Image (cartoon, rainbow, N blue to C red; front, side, top):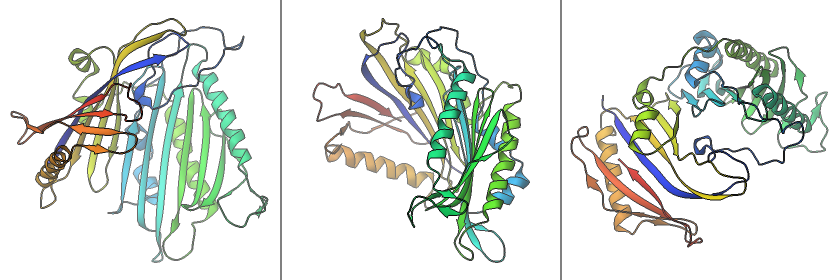
Length: 385
């Protein structure tokens, strides 16, 4: 069996950032940043952000026993596991695991779609402890979920006869606080369980619909299934943390090696793996200069992202040899036609170059992305091996 390794080289840009609070640039790998708020007297306190235990998507997957998981989302050709682990920042952790099966035999000759997903997250800042952050988020989310209720006592209360239907919140006894909500929409019937446990926000979603036979699975059955999984995950997150050892391609390269190759500091990796018909793993490191600055000061810092992606294509007519050659021809076409462009972005590609000493075959492509609508913005360069 053959596999293809695609290394998306460091995509580097010069970032002109205008921020009004001290600290390094936002973590680009997280894809999210907290909105800047004027601190109240209560929030003005400054403490050392608490270091959070490590957690991986694979650990969440392992917390659900195979027999339970198979009863909810059976193994099949049309299903697979998808696990992800957020960037390894000490003060912010995120991980998720999900399974789907688009043609599950649910009994009596009925085929259905089923999906089970789990996510956990926690965050600690200098102005709010991880528990305070989680409590605030939990309360805000609960109010939002209460607002979307449009079914009470089995009847629509919004005057509509179509569109997604959201049931009332049901109090549960998992963790420090918890509740569930069921809904029916385009993706069928599902139950969501929300749990606050110490510094952790936990969410479990389970549901689906039937391709044949009865239209939806039982609401009580769906709610009970989500509850069983939520109870297991809550217990898992209550355990003391074991040292997490990354395996596979994401464990080969260290942040220290990336820093020595580029510049400090590298955070990560965030890890995403999929075990469907085509197995693949993606590792991402955020690479940036940690620049201290005064509030309101404009500064320039180097930043980028390093991605490593491994896809196990296998052999045969559509295996790794075919996929490799197809990618090579694709980048040749991009270069020959002058790149790829639309109203917002223009990506120019340098000629593809063959590399020796890497695997059986290797090539490198350098691209440059510019914004036609912003002539002053410097180009972002990406190296793909």
